[in-house]
Length: 266
Ligand SMILES: Nc1ncnc2c1ncn2[C@@H]1O[C@H](COP(=O)(O)OP(=O)(O)OP(=O)(O)O)[C@@H](O)[C@H]1O
Ligand SMILES: [Mg+2]
Image (tube, rainbow, N blue to C red; front, top):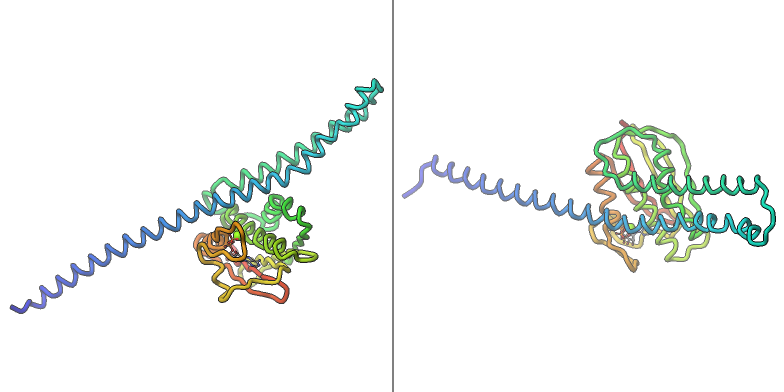
């Protein structure tokens, strides 16, 4: 017997509902997967961070350990120590520990999760980010220049912005070191265009040797690296595009790669 039109319709309706349910389940699964990757990426960058802390503390620790050597020697030999000399050393010690404590604060801020968007000056955020990774760059003689055409205030997730920046700079560092580039350098340019705040990161490591170049944003895509996990740029794109409504793009220039972060201004 032929079904009536109404029965056809109801059956179709039922079918649609089933499909909708399936789509919802799949979407939820995808969201969970992204979340997991996100957490893994955070853990991976935590390892990088720890390496950076140790870099950044090595120098001041050395300074501390040698600071009181002359005084200790004088004490041992029974030579009189001037009040001024002692005070001078104590002052230096205070300064070094202040610096060490401020680097730790940077790290702590970095790992606290952004709860809400906030207004921040882009240059200030870049500076405290650089503070975190500068040790690693210096250790490899990589020079870093920041060119400020504008210093806008943006409304965004502060720490996540830093995280993306760190991933991009660390990638440039890795490639500069691996390819043994002479006079390695990274330039950061901040400017404003058409209501967008643009941070460009340019290195002279010879560029990305992957076709098509956008593949670098795929999860788990890693190339030419010993310990790469391939989530750095995937996560950075997620942060900039999904969480901040911005854009993360990549291009090859004559001498190296150029990453462009665009975030809508306020
Ligand atoms: N500045 C760059 N110059 C040349 N190649 C680059 C540059 N930045 C990234 N790449 C390439 O893109 C790949 C993907 O980078 P991504 O940060 O996503 O992963 P990774 O660095 O390999 O691993 P990790 O998860 O530890 O960051 C790198 O393996 C590298 O081959
Ligand atoms: Mg990386």
